[in-house]
Image (tube, rainbow, N blue to C red):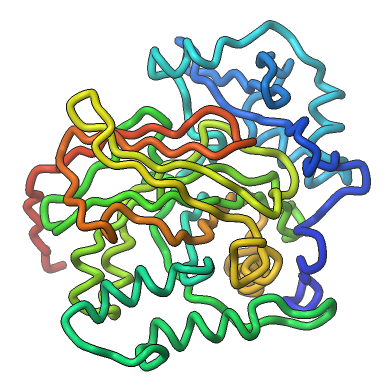
Length: 357
């Protein structure tokens, strides 16, 4: 499929006619719980209701690929499998049994990527980082220039292609951290800070067509001190683990998403701030951001999984907070299920020796 044929515009990537309208908040949420024998229980529920296991479902990935390759919606595939026993998600969380809400059998075929300067207000946070010691007129920095490009061209008219955003790579599936797991900052890092974001979750069909499963809360964990040194260090600062979930909201995202990001230290809330997302609070449409990711053929390899994070305007680092090992990041958003919690850990030094063949 050519990039021009991919136009995920208007509504969405690979939207099915029988997909539910999740703007009403009977949102469908899907997640994965690991079992003692190594198998996976796929749990599904409506917002505010109890979860039940999807029968004969090997994983969320298997269900999504079945939908992508059959011309059916994920909802229809789940209904065809049927629902079984109740699943206690709170108990699974407490026992550390949540998996990321989608995994791939081969970590190399899950891609963690992201984009920034997409939210109204995000440029001021980033620009303050990059120009804190100098008096720079508004619009003079590359940060502000790119942000203004998004304001002017990030929401194209139907049939048009909008301006491309900032883009970065975080890693493959080996960098995904389960909800409740540790976000490990490498020994050489200068900072390990949260970024509360929405992530789009996608699979690529056997014919190379991208399909969105839905959206999840994500922590796009980054090194903001390294980034502040010089914006050309952005790529280095983003090569860190990330966590998302615990649940995926199936379908399209609400236009106005409201959430809270907090840091818990020594059992008490140390820092807390609301954050917003959704197109009402963004300088780009999700469709424009999706198009500029999937226009590259390398990101349409059949069978691959993509977790693409859409940016934020809210960082504890922007408030002068220095995180510490043992801090718990907690991110929640209305309509997206259980909150995402992860603990900050610091890795020991790795000895790296380059051999000569």
